Image (cartoon, rainbow, N blue to C red; front, side, top):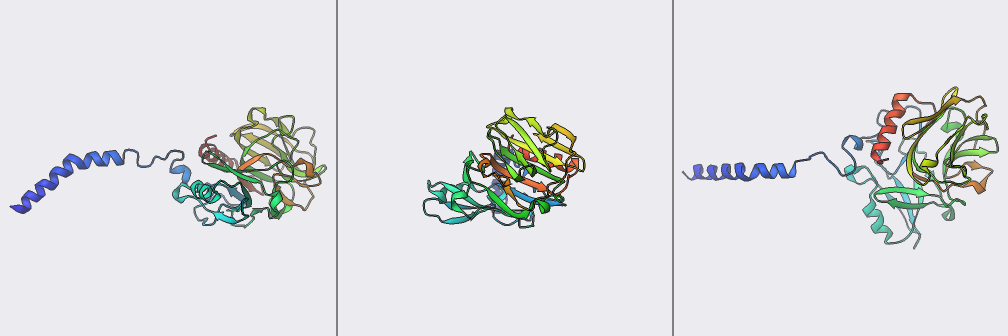
Length: 308
C-alpha cells in the first residue's frame, strides 16, 4: 500500500510540475545570444588546403587548442596568453578585462591557427598595436605611426611566389594614406590600402600599377566594420565586400619579387610613414586563388558571426 501511494505522489508531481519545468528550461535549447551552434563550428575545418595563415579573435578550427592572443599590460609590462571562452569560441572578454584592471593593453602575439605556426608578432613595445573591445568583439588597431605585427614568412611563401593569393578578413576601414597589410617597395608590392585617403580600397597583388584596375570606392565602409575578400587568380584581381563583388578584372603586370616578411598594419618595405590605423578582428590567407565555394562559405560565416 505504501509503495502504491509513493508511486501516485511521484506521478502527480511529474505530471503537474515536470512538464512545465521542462518547457521553461528547454524552450530554446540551441539558441545563443549572438551566434548559433552552426556558426560555432570550426570555420576552417576542411578548408586548410593551401592555407598561409589563420588569425582571429575566435577559434577557427575545432582541433586548435592554443591561445588566440598574447597581451601586454601597460601598467606593469606583464604579459599573458588568452584563450577562447568555452564553447562560445570567442576570446574570453571577462578574463581579459579582469586581468587588465583598467590598464591599457597592447598585443604582442596574434596566434596562427593554421597549423603552420606563422604567428603575427611585435616584440618592440613602442610598436605594439592597441588591443580593445567593441562590445564583445575584440580587435587590435595601429596608431598610424609605427604600430604593426609581422609574420616571419616572406611574401613569396605567403603567396604563390609573389603572385596568386586570397585574403578573407574582417576589418574596420579608416581613411588615411596607409598600407593595411602586405609588402611594398615602391612599385614592387603585394599590398592593400583599406582605405587610402581618397576613400578607395586598393589591392595591388604584384607590380603596380595595373592601369588603375585595382580599386573600388569604399567610402560607405569608412569607420565601419566590414568583411573583405581579396583574390588574385592566374589572370585576374577580385575585390569583394560583404560577399558582393566590386571588381573583377585582368592583372597584366608581373608578380611581386620581394622577399620581405608579410606584415599587418603596414606593408613591410620602404614607406614607414604609411603605417595603418585600420582595425583587425580576423585575417585568413591562402597562397592561391581559392575556389568560389570555399571563399563564399567563409564570407557568409564571417558576416553572420561578426554580425556585419
